[in-house]
Length: 352
Image: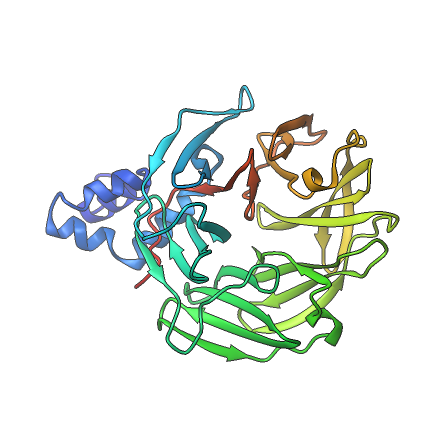
């Protein structure tokens, strides 16, 4: 250690600080401010922040936002801290569409504007433009947040407008939108198909595309973020005698899906993607009968070996995983009646 230069030692120490402490450290001196603002520092700090102890549940109520730690030993949340929205909003106005490495892509429901927002640093960036880019319509559009091989954070926006599909990519690096081609089946343009938010895993964004009736078509659309090519793979082979819902999860850079199927009594299976094929990991006992509206708000997350199945009214049950413990970070979902997400706290900026 004595042979290491002071700059290297300081760098190694600071990349291990919590995100909020890094923000405070920027005021120590000009040299530290410059060091902590470099992309190399942000990238390494982010890689060291993506751990289970740094998981937080972010909850959005009508006008407020709170962040709570996850307490794994009693399967509950810790004390909440209030987060002030740094942008103008109205009552029940902010919807989370996608998130990655502490950045959230959100929509302001009264203006349809898209924003990138880091709730830990409070920094945000509006993505809307005068030429109508960066505006999101619920139930028609799909959003995916990802980072490419050049460490450029990007937003993929799939827009369906009156039978016309447009696909656009926003680049944080160049601060602009551009159109890219998308060749897929024409029927996926129909509003009868529900597109999920994109889940980023292993250099690919994945979307579930499910037809909104019993026995309908269900597929997964894959977007390679470096080649910007799309392809379609099959859905896990779940029964088609009920409503089907797939929730994609990145578990240690391996794609998993919680596939729910049924009507009055539901089953939930956990699948993992190997190549282009799905392998079943486990099944849970059937969930007791619940209303269809409540079922649509079911969410899941896994931490420290426990699998939680929750609804907007509270936790249904906890399943001890019959395998070695693993962690996951969830795409956007609903938690106990609030809009929210499981996130990690980082210093990743929504703008360059």
